[in-house]
Image (cartoon, rainbow, N blue to C red; front, side, top):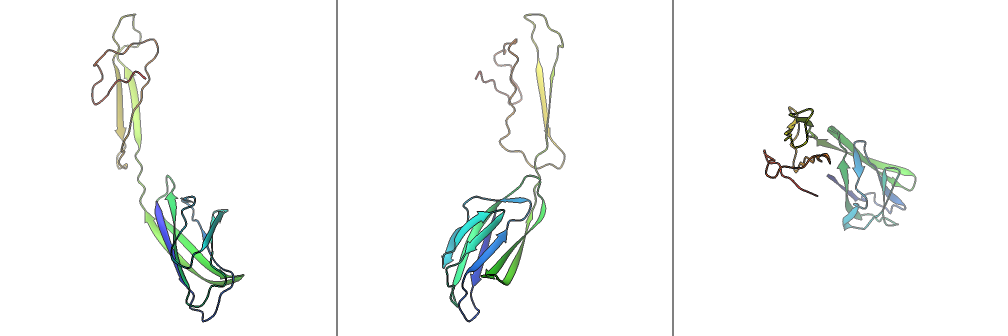
Length: 173
């Protein structure tokens, strides 16, 4: 998650009617719903539509008024490199300026692989089968945390109590 902070102070020498700040959410990230929050200064009102955050400033926005607000975006899976975010300020329909922020993200997801094998391809009733599950995280891949491997046994076999090894456990549910 990236938190952006936007600060604006009116130093124009006059009032700004209908002042708005628009922030088009960049590709590679998703706006976190309802995350826009006033921090200090005059409070803005927020709407989000068509991938644009609209911060409407109080009307009139007087000379010397300032506002600071934050909002969050979630980095999408597979996004890496730089994320460029731009906010623009309008006074009614007049463009007043823009700001550009670059955030770097390093997403290095885990690349997990699994294989399952059985030691006997055709077994008579009462024979003991040994299933082996091998798993790995690819070379150079990111860390995998809280990973669980779930293997449902076929309905035609019965688990041999205590036979799970290598950190495995049996759960009858």
